[in-house]
Every structure is written in C-alpha cells, then in structure tokens.
Length: 239
Length: 239
Image 1 (cartoon, each protein chain N blue to C red):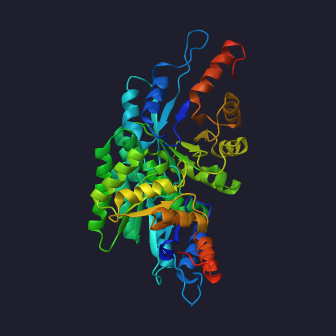
Image 2: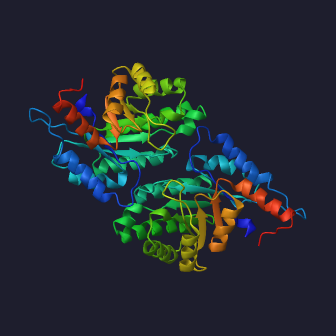
Image 3: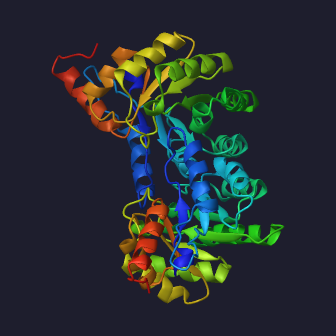
C-alpha cells in the first residue's frame, strides 16, 4: 500500500505555482521520509497542471517519480477533440500519466455513446504514445448515482482505461469510502481505483485504501508520508 | 446602462445543465421583464460552457440575444494552442462572444511575451471569423496587483481585444469597484470593461456600472432585471 500513497495533486492555480511545483518535485526527487531500516517512501507521481509538465519533467529527470497531469480540468465540459489536443501536447511535453475529467453533461443527458467515444479517444492515446502512458478517467463521483457510477466503471474497463478516479476537488464532495468500494467491486482487478478529493491525513488515506483504492491523489502527500514514517518509527506499522 | 446589465453566466457545471440552459435562453428569448411604457429589458447575451454553445444557438435563433462562451475556463493554465482549438470550435458552433481566461502562470512568472502571444492569438480569431466576434480577456483580478492589472489592461488595448473582464467566479474574490475603476481608467474608451464574480443584486450591478463597467456577468441576471423593472415601476428610475 505504502508505495502508491503519495501521488501529489496541485489542484488550484496558486498565484505563483512555480516554486511550489519545484518544491513538490524536490520532495519527490530527493527528500522522501526515511523509514526504519534506511529505506524511503517515495511518492509515485507529481501531478501538475498541463502548463507545468515541462517544468516538472525537468525537475524530476533523474528520479523514478512519474509526471501526471490533468486534462479537461476541472469541469470536463470540453469537446473530445479539445481534450485530445490538450492530452497529446501533454504527452509530447513528457507526461507519464493523464487524468482526464469526463463530460458530465453527456452522463446526465444519457449520451452514453459520447461518454464511450471520449474514453476510446483517450485510450487511443496510449496506443499512439512512444512510451507507456497511463490514462485515468476522473468521474466526479459527487454528481453520480450508484447506477451511473457502476455504468461508468464498467465502460472504463471495457474501453481499456488504466484507472477510474473519484474527484477533481472542484465538484460537490470528494472521495467517499462507499463509492470507492463500489468502484473496486465493479472493476475488480481489471482497472485501478484512484481516490482523490478531501484526502488530507493518513487516516483518510488508510480509509480509502481499505475501501479498495490503490492510488491516492492528495495535495497533502508529504504530510501523509511523514505520518506513515512516524507510525512506522513508533511501531504502529501500517498494514 | 440597462441594456448591458443582463449577460447571463453559467459558472459551474450543474449535474444536468440542459434544462437550466434552455430556461436561461427562454428568459433571453421571450420573457424579459416589461417596464412602464411597454418596453422590455433584454439580456445582452447568454453565457454557457462550450459544450452548450450549439444548444444555446438553437434555442436563441430567433432572438437578438448573443451566445457567449468561456475558453480555458476556469483555470486558464492551458497552452495557447489548446485555447485556440477550443475557441475555433466554439466559433464554428455559433458563439458570438468568447471570454478566455489568461494564463496566470505567465503573469506571475513575468512571462509577459507569452501573455501577449495569447492575446494576439485570441485577437486573430476575430480576423479569421466570418462574422463579428467579440473577445474578452478574463484577468482573474483577485490574483493581481494594481501594477499587473494596469499592465494587462494596456496590453489588451494594444492587442485589440474588445473587453477586459474581472473574474471567473472560481478565483479568490470577484469584481471589486476599485479594480473596475482602475480598469476603466486604464483602458479609457478603447476597450470594454466587464465586471463579473459575486454580482447577485441590482445594487451590486449598479456599483460596478458606476465604477466604470459597461457589461455585467452574473448568474442572477433575471433577478437583477426584475429588480430594475420594479425600481422603474415604483418611480425609482435607475440612472
């Protein structure tokens, strides 16, 4: 569990994000907390807005930490063609992972063919990319009924996406353990489940992992990793 | 003043915006408040997410109300090429007005050449369009110092944009009378000033117009127009 906790998410555009991005990359690159025995707990990825992908790639070039970015963020109400252009540019800039926001208007208007068209378009990027690319669909679960959530999860598996992800942080509510459990139950082992939105403490993260998440998106990554290191030091090893 | 008050802004993606858009277009099309003497107070434009431009154009086709949409909304941290693709698609779909969010990262990193490049790219859309197109730069004034705001306003005039606009509603704070006054003072009559963000009542709108705004962006357009009609009926004519 520990290795996948630390995906870093820069949600809102701070007035000057540049130092924050560099600091986040620094955390990812060289300052992970040290655990008993001398090992470290790395973050899995640093997640930045598309604008900062080149910067994050430069900062992380000697690290194994991935660069993740967001597409159609945060509202998702862009045409599929616009999302594709944004995604292609991000891949060209060096992004390893793309978290795209589904078009909620299609879902709520029952335009499931359009929802699938978008998933297919995003999956195609994986086939076109010269290197491994991970694609996640952000479902903005706070808007969804259970039926819609299950349908979207099944569709993501059928379309060959890598992850379903809960929230942008801009929608109503963040990840809930109940919805994460339903997502995991639906996708089984065919797809990853990323919980994000409102995860600020180790307890939040543990609850999501216990519900079935195998990736956490959080702006509090370093604090959570330090809590893990502290728990390990004090003998309260995370299960 | 009255004719320009009513620009309608659909800020956040409701779970199912479709009925809301249709209702807003209905307000714009056929149900404006009637004022003494039998005249009506029209809204100037209905503002929708790019996804809903075709729907708004269909609903408004017999009306003089414009269709406005938002580009790079709400964070603005997209590459200029992505914004251009989104804007071109919106124009093709029938949008009359484009409110694009400037890239705050460029501003805060002092990359003024990039800010200008974006303004030039958006202005070029006006030249390429087959019909009149109005382009507004959303400056997200809550992030800006007075010096930055003045510099951006001067640049917008030099680049030939039609309007500078205060806020998306997603940034810190909305329109303030002080910043609207500074914007008007800087652009003079060479450019419009649209105040948006947190404008919910007639009193808010009047304050912005008195400060120098000639367009108001609000999700409370119909309520404000009804307040104007009421003020007119009771003899308290809006100056």
